Length: 133
Image (cartoon, rainbow, N blue to C red):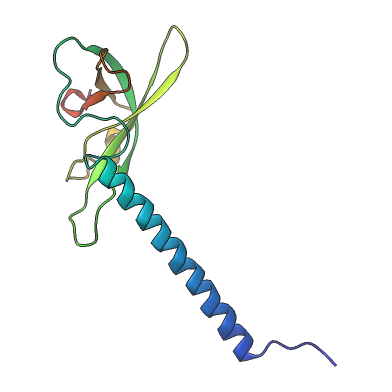
């Protein structure tokens, strides 16, 4: 007597898979919404307003562009990801720009951009997209 896969067996497996994907999606959206409630301006310690007063400037390299988290029906939004390597320590830091509404184009990858750090609050920063070279 051989083992055969019936259409009912396949249907049950497909239904379970769809259910697991739906549950995973619900959990991901819940976590994303919680993070947005905690920091409505976005993830990390990025400051959308320029760092004022005493500030430290570093020059970072643009690594890429990512789509920003948004709600269904919201317009497209993007963020520029850049990396700075401290020449003295070799420590790398990654920075994310404020949300921008227009796709800047992949041509910006590899360009240099200024990042202003707030020495009073380590971890707070502003990526100056207007300074891109």
